[in-house]
Length: 118
Image (cartoon, rainbow, N blue to C red; front, side):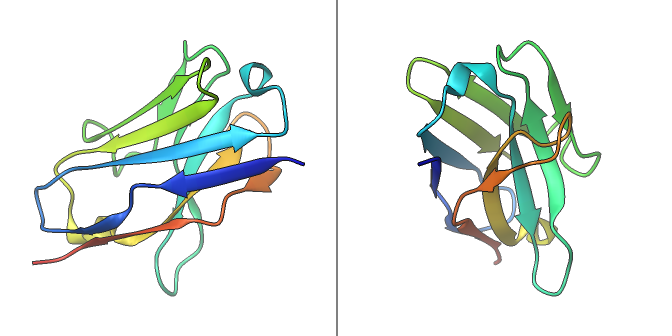
């Protein structure tokens, strides 16, 4: 079955960095765009970044442009989110999804908590 497993979350101070990873299985990874979403406590889930199947095109939320970078490794069936210059407002549960942005996401991982606090 389709499975997405996120890792890499944690507690960091403002200005620090984290790299999230998402390992995919159960589908032909190279055929699908992938995305990262986040959901802060009491707020709706929002798209953070998306990447096409080949990695040629990437999209970012305005709030993370210039700080976050999405990438993928099609040999490892994995997608990544490099997060730099983290801010307290980046605190949320981060989810990896199959599809998203160009088509509705149809599968989600379990999420990984990112907390930015001094």
